[in-house]
Length: 113
Image 1 (cartoon, rainbow, N blue to C red):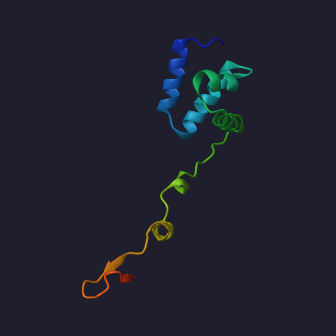
Image 2 (tube, rainbow, N blue to C red):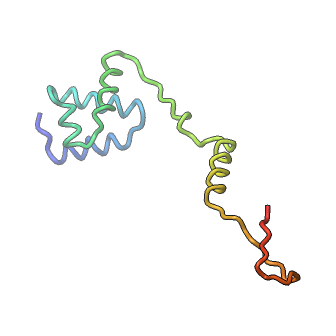
Image 3 (cartoon, rainbow, N blue to C red):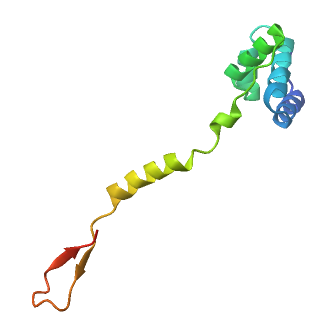
């Protein structure tokens, strides 16, 4: 099957409008329609990820849908971020010195804790 520019645009826009399992199913059906070497053609001409296409083909042929664990990609817990922040602050901050006017020697420096 020949991919014209108009057909490419339809495939690309349709895939961009879908998410998750629906997108994978669409890409898998499209690749099957393209025939032998369709995954490579879709990757090169449509900009689709071949790993995602393969996952969609497995779902299409196996009759099951992979459940994405997107919640695991979320924000880190505050406790984890605080530990990282403490390390960064300790590495970048220098001790601060305060000069006292009441000392005769102005070179005396007291480190603040």
